[in-house]
Structures are given as structure tokens and as C-alpha cells.
Image 1 (tube, rainbow, N blue to C red):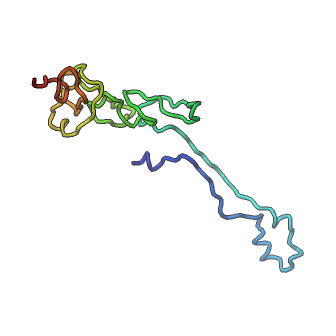
Image 2 (tube, rainbow, N blue to C red):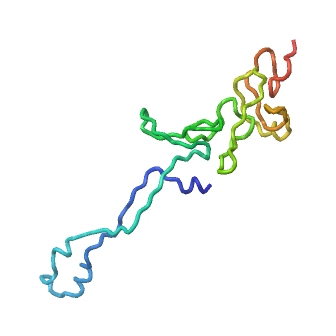
Image 3 (cartoon, rainbow, N blue to C red):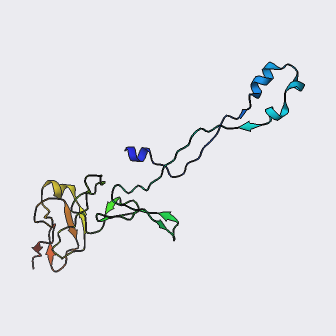
Length: 166
């Protein structure tokens, strides 16, 4: 993606062609080496007109701030929209009803809680379940692909909605 293409962590400027104050032209113009001013030929310089480097944390539209962590001396995203990770690059546990997507200026793409009816703490996203509309979201609609993990109280199913036989 364009975001990955333009990302940089450490920037090094490498100057490759040393210049002198037109000493190369002086060598051609003067036949006698004693006529060449050594002060001019021994001064080397680089010319930089403008350098602009901007920086920001890559939080995929799921954070407004990127504070410095004093313990690690690194900045990390203050994730919102039920996202987790150093760059808010995944949904938090229990919020996988919909597939993670990067947020935009107009659409948040919040991670949505799975509807496990209070019988499980974690879930994962399954595209096949979403395509077949088999997972019930928290609004009572068969929308999304959240599959509950480790259903309790003798329940089973994508949403811990059925009783275990026995």
C-alpha cells in the first residue's frame, strides 16, 4: 500500500560528490600549479537547499495521540475503536464480530464485540461464517463473522447460543 511505501523509521543522508570552490576549473585554467590558491582547493563543501522530514505514528486511523512511553522510550498509539497493538493493527480480544479495517477520516471502522451471550470472553473472525450469515451480532442481526471461543455453562455454537447435549 502507499502507506507502507512511504514509511521510514530511520533516515540517513548520504552525500556522495564532494565539491570544492571551483577548484576543478582552476586546475584547467592555470598551467602552473603554484598559481592555484591552496585555500580554495582544500575547502570542501556540500550544498543543501532544503530538507523537510515529517513524522507521525502509523495508527491506521484508530488513534488521536501517540505518546512516548518512558519505559521503552518509544511512541505507541493510544488506540481507540476497540483496537489493540502497537499500531492499532488488530481488534482487541472479544471484539472480532467484524473484520479489522483501517479507519478513515469519514468512517471509524470500529471493532465490534462478539455476541457470546455472556458465555465466552474471546472470539475470532471467520470469513466463511460471515459469508453464510451464521453469526449474530450485538444488534440481533446476522452480520459479521464472530465465532466465540470456549463457551461456558454447557453452551456451544458460533454465539454460545445452543445447549450441549446431555
